[in-house]
Length: 316
Image 1: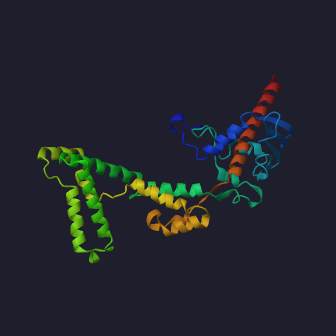
Image 2: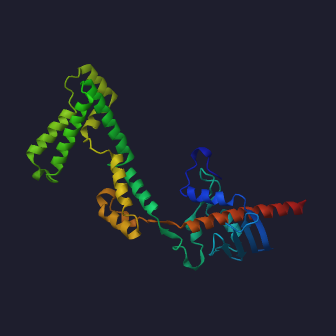
Image 3: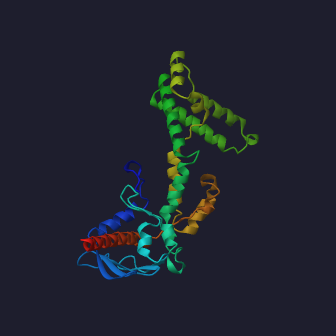
């Protein structure tokens, strides 16, 4: 059963699947041999072997060869066509019409212990994992960005009620950020914080959030429309969570050339991405294996259509 149209997820390999569809739209099945479980057929566009492949089956095995999907052999059940027709797969699962194939499950059926060979380090996968982690982060995530936007909206309204122009508003923010940066530079514990800088930071924050000159009725309306206490209780950073996420991801991109370099970067940024990144699998499915899986899926569908047509002809 396919997922309802309204909830179909995006295919994580949409680009690969789109390339496969573009190159195989005119492909047809050519049956070269069919004797029970011994089969040999070719899938190709008429008149050319480009982007073509062969599928050969014998009891308990299925092998692929050709211009693409070359050099793979699977084993699991006596009839491998029947196995690949349904095992680890849901038709039309993704929004682009691609089937949901359990690539890990299919890879486990590769002969010769090749299941690890078909996963390779992927810098894009590494960056996606970093991105997903940051987006879920309490400090840098998407919810933190929403909170930050609400803070800025409240401060903008507050400053406008005070009659401050753009330059005056910018000056208050700059004074607040500068004071916080000076305070942070003094150390990590209150025991060593410079009292003068702490007082300066408190004064700059109070000036940023000051309600001087705002009539009580307007202030009451402002607090009714906003969660004043929560928004004013958290520091307003100079750089938004979204900006900081982008900066971190760009830094990670500079260290994405190899798997070892990526793991070293993760280890050096535990304060940002967490301490469990040593468990992250930075590999993703090799594009040739993805193509092979899509080739098998198409071959099986075409063959089953061929077999159904033969049955109908026999019945007629």
